Length: 275
Image 1 (cartoon, rainbow, N blue to C red):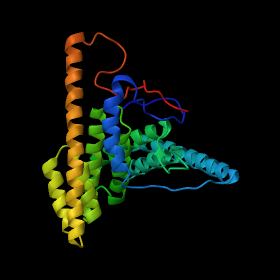
Image 2 (image 1 turned 45 degrees about the vertical axis):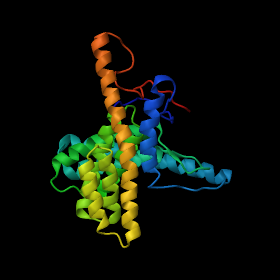
Image 3 (image 1 turned 60 degrees about the horizontal axis):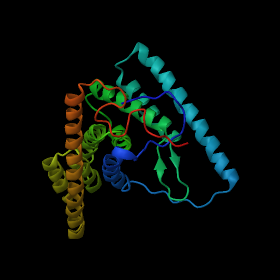
Image 4 (image 1 turned 45 degrees about the horizontal axis):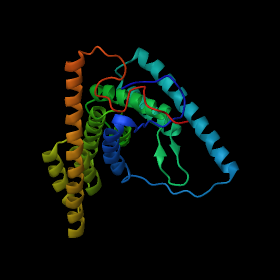
């Protein structure tokens, strides 16, 4: 994952030109899943409230960033400490959340460049944490499943989106194993279907149905999975097309051209970022 050095709050999508179809497929699939989690509805706010909220968010962001620096200093002396790694993971997520923006009319959450960078760092530290512990906490797994999915939604290539969804599914598996429910297993089924593990998705869906309280809920789970499977198959086709294009470009050009990384339809460092 690329890490930028600018602190500008900008959106991460450019759907012009040849990137248009890939971006729309990946974003459309993943944005629909994100819609299941949270929708904020806000009316007009007084200017005082708006500026107060902005000041509070800025203050919180600074506090979380200072927290990450303190934990990183401790990790220098004890780099494999799972408690420190977990604390650093959470601090990066909190810093990313405090940097995100929300449309006051639609409630849509928009990741800024800074928030995505914090999420990427959280993802990296989370991987270190999983290697350092045999018993990852359920709360952290729940947090990271959502965070990794947010990264998938804003990925700059279908391959990157696929990797992030896979990581989100692995975190969701931890939650589902420890706290099985219709929600945890139903979400796991959706995540798995987008990793193209269709058999695993079916299994998770069947487990989720055991927690359903009515025939209607069981039917809804089946209907939901069927719909997402259709979308996942389209996503899988897009991934394969991107890989084929990357291979053809490499063979045809011999890697001699500079510019956008091959197979990266979102453009690492090349997207048009809005203010």
